[in-house]
Image (cartoon, rainbow, N blue to C red; front, side, top):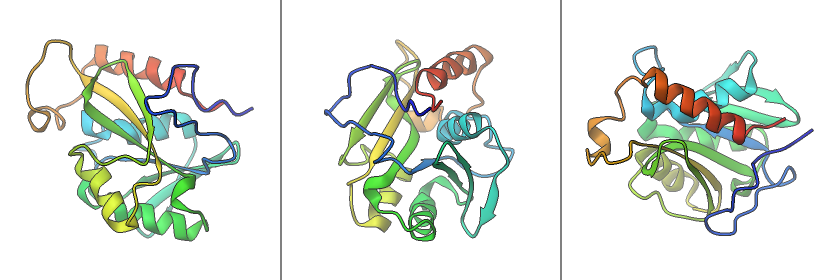
Length: 180
């Protein structure tokens, strides 16, 4: 059974469906050094939900579950568009079939927003996807990582390891937006 998202209201009315979302791309950086950092929330989501082995193809790895393709770039965050373009081409899909999952420092930890046809809001991985696909017409699942009351700039904490309590909060969010 396919349940992409909970009943939380969508920020801009975007309503992804089983028919529209065929590829879920979790952004992050490759390597153990970055595996458990806040900037890898997108990859952590994909790995947790896909719960399977990933096959490598050029600049991305992928796994299939419930008729959906889960992918994660093997490029660094700022080159995520390369993987997005290759995956769409490899699976013969359009940008409208893509859901990009990423961290968002403007959203509080434990919250998320779903958007469609929006700019990057300064997220370099998303900007890479927009630049290389030459469109903003794809879905985004923006998972919050901002601590309440913290005013630190995102660049100062996105590459820090995720604390145990924050990881627990994120796992709860992942379950809320799970594919079942």
